[in-house]
Length: 74
Image (cartoon, rainbow, N blue to C red; front, side, top):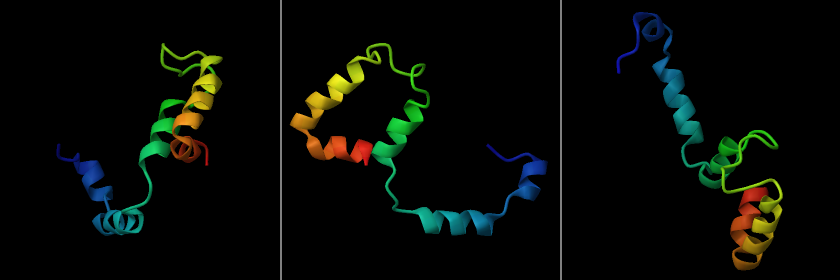
């Protein structure tokens, strides 16, 4: 969608390209998934997960895929 005239005049294409070039290739997946999904301690868990279930789930996953669990918490 085209930008409105107001935002078209504010948009700095050179700065946008510079930002992209500086951040291209940085890690994005797990970190963004975890912290974009759960942003409060109690209110944003998916319906199948309770506060009590999360530590148990990660303890089980740590035995199966320790590297993946380490990525989530490191």
